[in-house]
Length: 116
Length: 111
Image 1: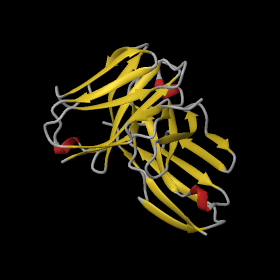
Image 2: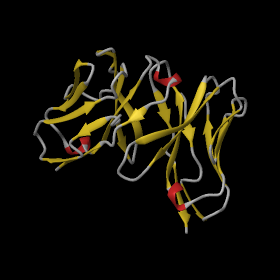
Image 3: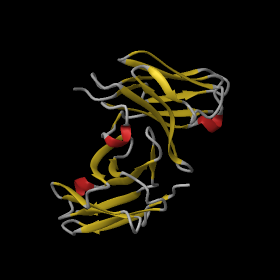
């Protein structure tokens, strides 16, 4: 298996622009997570899907952030409009169980986002 | 509120040494703890998951222990190699669907 695939690897954009991050989870996994990693705050869960349904989006910082999972093999995280403070590494992860905390999480390589 | 602390933040050791990484958590009401490895520019790789009913887990040269009563976990790496250089993070559950990560220990193994 190719693992969790994220694109793009790097994204540089200007403030105010729309940014879309993409994720393909491991085939057969039914749970998908979006995390954000910064030096100041470490790793933070943004949103969690189970069987393509958003279960917990309490970590989504603002209305500027939205996430979708139209099918079991694809998810997007959109920021509109982007701001410099959104600069971070965004990770997608998947697991084969509803409860990620009892199953190992598999992470993608992340998208390094820089908003100028 | 759960707090997860990893000390030291960075560690350098010569190749071949055995080493211990530490993880402390304030809320001992956890049902497991995971150790992850993160290489620069890459995502996290789950190394070991210890259930609360277990005291330790082993995988190759890695051994992780869990002491809930004291709020501590350790990751022991035997016979360290340059390829072990990475950031190691521990994580504990906060609810059913989230993991709370420590800030990590950046390990450098010097050839």
